Image (cartoon, rainbow, N blue to C red; front, side):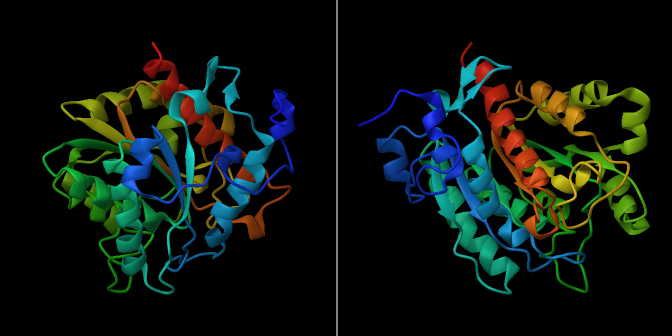
Length: 321
């Protein structure tokens, strides 16, 4: 018998899927038939991590802790399950030790989601997985023009790492090479600290990418920074892709990540940022670098889940108007 009790879905009931949503293969026909508007796809790959591995366990942990969340969002007065009819499309069939092979396999999954008319939402995994979505968007329709907003304590603009261009330090260059992305509509928010090589800063300057460092956030505040980023990413584009790296946050609040960074964005500031980001024409987003082996009381995974749910709810507020 189906229960109408909201709390019956919380905690340990049933298999671990995102928000207890039904499982579905990433098949465009099934997505269309069931009217799915958002699909979760895990990418449990951390084979390019140069600091601490462990983010391959991120997607599984996110599903587990998401059982402590309900689809109705109090702040936005929306039910994201009703808005998006969410499905959990499982995990990409990772190609062990092969980042590009994994990206290609994942890209096939994302393309099915896009062709089915649903919003792709990726959970990582290290930051190379962002390219899975951006390449799929480019393949889906290379005539479109998309903005790109990256929250990260690192610039992630390395051309390659040790000669390998498919690394979690390289998602920005691999995305900017695509026909549907232009550096003038790309924004990096939150970079700071002693893990950003000068060569990567030179790439930002040469390509004309907009950069808001942590010092900019200290001075301007997160609201002004994000409002400016939205204008840049949305200017003349057909939509915006957003990537949230959990290491963009203050390390003491999110210890379960591959490269925790002191002095980062506060969780409350990111929640403010996401409220503003709901106004963009969202074409996809990801949350990456969740590394459960280093977490305390699952706090980083719970926070990442909050960001996933908040982003959907914030956008739903505008879609339901």
